[in-house]
Image 1 (cartoon, helix red, strand yellow):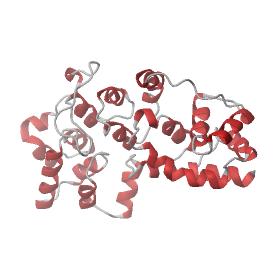
Image 2 (cartoon, rainbow, N blue to C red; image 1 turned 90 degrees about the vertical axis):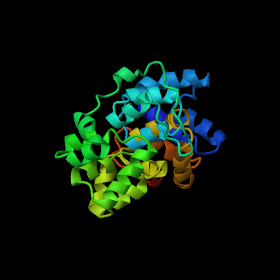
Image 3 (cartoon, helix red, strand yellow; image 1 turned 180 degrees about the vertical axis):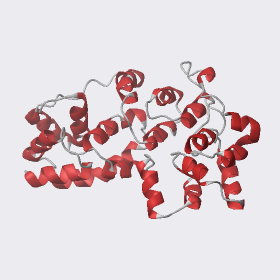
Image 4 (cartoon, rainbow, N blue to C red; image 1 turned 180 degrees about the horizontal axis):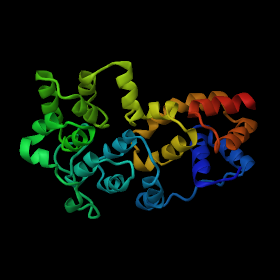
Length: 282
């Protein structure tokens, strides 16, 4: 195969889901180099992080990294082209994202509080809930929503919306935050069109959803290939979702892997469709 940083990493991720002996044989057959030497965790992260930060991803992928509560990982999320102002503000303030973490995190030296996005004027004037209710456009609502950081902020928003529903723009701006609590998002709306819009904004339920439903397959698999370094606690969910599929349709069949390697650069569907198509053609 013509190995490049995208297709080589993508195929390599799938090969990691089958028997190691079969994987080594198939690598030789399709001309895919063996994985590089391990090195230190920090060295491996740095070798891929610059490429990672320039690859557009659904915002939920960045949330999975933030849930590690690792200052070193947070500095790469800060630099990521898909990070929003809410994420950057939280990183600069040391806000934890892990479900069981309390108290502020250490902030990496490369992330300075002075670089935090400006505090919106409406927040200074009206406070958090007032700024959300004052949002009369999507832009102003997004700006106000970027100030929702702590768990206590989300709880206050939920209670305020329960007492008197927030304006539509505010609800939308909050719902497309990947860290919006699921119960609050459900409180905002459960209509199919609403759910579809949230998903289109890059908010996904789990890494398994990303692995099996998001397109295109080559980009998804490239991102997942960084998972053990960039979101190690969550990547196994994607692996578990894809492993039975890969073993059923590809397994140790060299011809099927050859077809997959030829298809992957130009295939526009998701990973499930890619794997099934390669197996069927072979």
